[in-house]
Amino acid sequence: MTAALRVRQPGLLTTIQDLGRPQAVGAGVTPGGAMDRFAHAAANLLVGNDRGAATLECTLTGPRLVALRQCLVAVTGADFDPRVNGEAVPTWTGIDLREGDEIGFAGRRTGARAYIAVAGGVVGDRWLGSMSTNLLAARGGMNGRALATDDVVSAAIQEYPDVAGRSLAGDQRPPYHEHLLHAVVGPHANRLTPASRHDLFSAKFTLTHDSNRMGYRFEGASLEAPGDELLSFALIPGAVQLPAGGRPILLMADHQTAGGYPVVAVVISASMPVAAQLAPGDEVRFEEVSIAKALELRAVQRAALLSLMS
Amino acid sequence: MQPQRSTVRVRVHPLGDTALIAELGTRLDTALNTRAIALASALKKRRDVRQAVPAHGNVTVQFDPDQITYEALAAAIRRLATKRPPVEEPGRLHRIPVVYDGPDLESVATALGLPAGKVVELHSRPIYRVFLVGFVPGWAYLGPLPDELVLPRRAVPRTLVPAGSVAIAGQETGIYPLASPGGWHLLGRSTVKLFLPDSDPPSLFRVGDRVKFFAATS
Image (cartoon, rainbow over all chains, first blue to last red):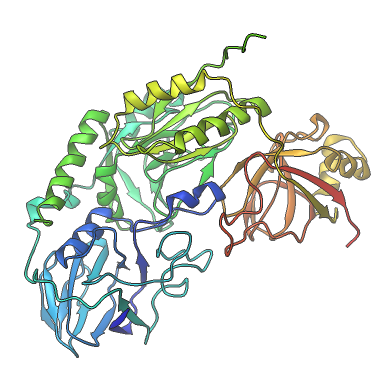
């Protein structure tokens, strides 16, 4: 393990995340992990890491970090206008930092979550098979909490891979700007009244401020799905729950592992990166797709990531 | 003796493109839960399955769509579900002391038309089964409650329920592992630690375990 970056300013919420701990769900522990798996994987591949290595997930604002030695980093996902020593640097591109360089962000332009990968892979506390930060349990990541000033971010190994300058073109990234979430109808969609089923897949919904890594609450059409109360069952990220109030909730990486609200739709894996980049106030639509279409869109993202592995 | 063929039907529904739910039944029923646990165990052994979590009468399955299609996995599940479930070993028995001085004990007794003492006696009489672990870390859905204790959830959930609260709602009972919002009726409190972050699995209760409450004075 080797020290790579010192935290000068942590930003609003910067946490260490990898692919989470799905096997812990059976104990009621949220799976966690990077919200935008595409940006997370791309950041890692741009610096020569395994795609599942841990990165820093930066929420709405970015941190300021000082390189303690030469290191290769990449910033993907949201565009917070990244800077090195005050000079603008590109996103989705490997950036070589020298000792003493400061990487920071001038301000949010698009998206909600930026990912910073470090060559060699960010190191966090391992808990139940993952380095992802679980704030509720105060485990994983940086001592179970968000980054704080003067923390030192380490990499698993000191590497100078020969991939500096590698980048992922805009047309290779998910359609973040479209704010369109593709979804497959859920197991309880048949409970929706015809008007509500129509609204779910045509009306615009606005992400509220009561939204976080656990789940997103939307304002907009009020949906009705009457029926008997359900016994609770295990949930997954992407599930669109409909509580009695009629405002849908989209479950995200830190979701409650079980619940009894009807699941009226499930956002497909290829749309979850788009969901991860929504910020409160953003308007979105849900569009119904088949599983076949979902797998096509998934394959497109897979191919884009594969192009970074050659 | 001929092995009995199951008459249980399984309904499979996709959950997006990488998961599905296999529904064996919608009632609170020990036999259904036993089947759900057996089905989840069988599915977890498959390389194309990433995770299978049994609940009351269904299993939520996450799979790798690069290794198997939804249709093929659903067909495999239908085959597995018609197999006779193995005879279940009795789950571990947990004896949990409860101080029955909860803020809702009196209102529950009134709503049910029972003396508070009878509510306590009825609640601490059965050996409950753990039907599902989930919601928050360490939470377990326990049941079934005696019919005399069945009540809907509180109309207005509490914004903060203290950790250790022993509660009932519908046909089930449970213990809040952490302070959290909650809509169940609070009958008492327990000091048992349900979420064990430094153990693996990090939950004291596991599906299929048995739980017996007994009244304690402090």
